[in-house]
Image (cartoon, rainbow, N blue to C red; front, side):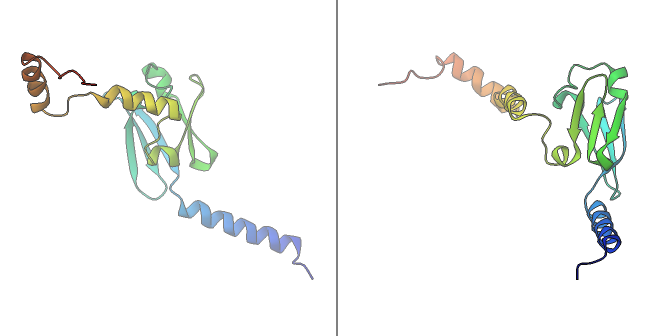
Length: 137
């Protein structure tokens, strides 16, 4: 005979509580205007922060709009009502700050960035020698 429905409900509630305890969820979030960071406190005692300039929909937002961050979905998401922006905590922890197209544009913008003091100097010296050699067919 099948389990009593109340027993099934209780078992499902216990499984759900175990899942919520296992995953890090947001319990606090705020915008720090001085640093330009969104700070997120997690249910497991950890915290992390990310610059608003990296997140799709937040990069051009005003400090007032950024300050109105809400925690949604039992701590699995961040929401900005005025900006109509939602970001997932698992996605942010994985380094995903927007859609694939947005992330591709972000990577492309950083692709040629100077990463050392030697790089711009080497480029200048290469330019003095005539730049990159022409491709030969």
